[in-house]
Length: 252
Image (cartoon, rainbow, N blue to C red; front, side):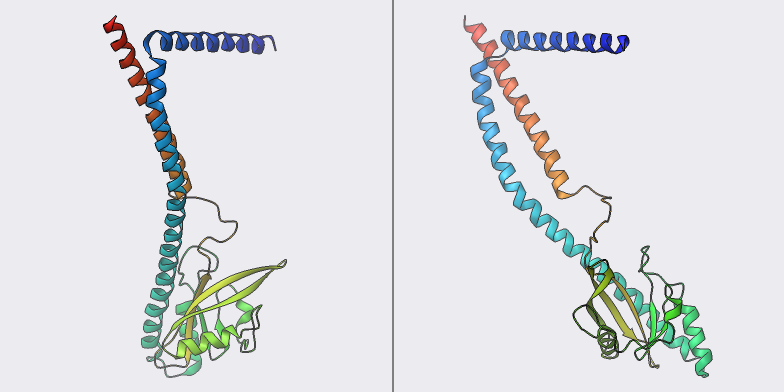
């Protein structure tokens, strides 16, 4: 405790000494009037900048959301399209239906569209689930009557979309505890068969609970830019004050 008190007292003396030295320097070398008039327009400019950067950051964040959503859709569509084409060619080599199904299941099982737990590809025949990697007990179950929280028969819609040439289907899933999650899936038929594939992801590109990571957010960039701007304004005003004091001294 004694050591702590001594360190605190020493820190206080150093702070007072530094404050006194800074005050003396400003009094001797900086013109207060010139410093004030130089800082005033800089402060006004930074205030206006702050007012304009808020809507700009909102636009940037909205654009970022659009780009992330487009990247998600491209990833889902590209994976399912390439896999459907490959499975169509693979199915054509096996005339026996049971062997063909087993072949398709083995081909689909390891495919992933990303690193999240939902980033798998599922295989269906009509409205009957053939294989979902994370739901082994769902194989053989008919989900034709399955509805989402709004009563939409989303499996039926996914099948119809797949057979119509492929595309996206959205539905709202009940994930328990009174919570809902909007989901978006891309589905496509396997050529030459009555099977179809699908891959889904949350409709929101920033699911609740996702940790912030990666590049700085627009808000963080705005904060750092404003902080640097204020420091630059203060430095410029200080320089003007020093030059004004030197000019006053030279005129005496």
